[in-house]
Image (cartoon, rainbow, N blue to C red; front, side, top):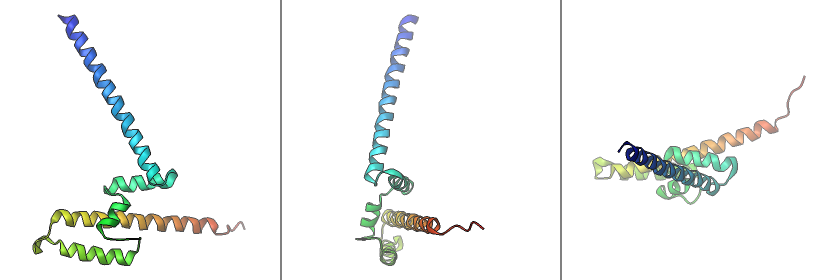
Length: 131
């Protein structure tokens, strides 16, 4: 009887182990594909991290805020309008309002990354004082 219980435990552990390994491989492949779609290399990694932190891709955020290209003024204008239009006290949806906020956060993150990248490029092109 103990022999059969041991066999069941070993087989069960093998099944769970294989399933875990397969799930891990799929997750790694999905992560690599997401980074590749986001531009590959360090840029793709940065975008994938920003997407994961906000739960939205840049494209989804732009669709939510009805943007064709990244313009800060238009984004703020659309954000204010959509946020007010979906105010719960006016019969709006808290869910939609939260999606609008997340979309703004994702686009703000993109603006922040672009600004940091331009600062880094400016600092690299500055001549160094070696006196």
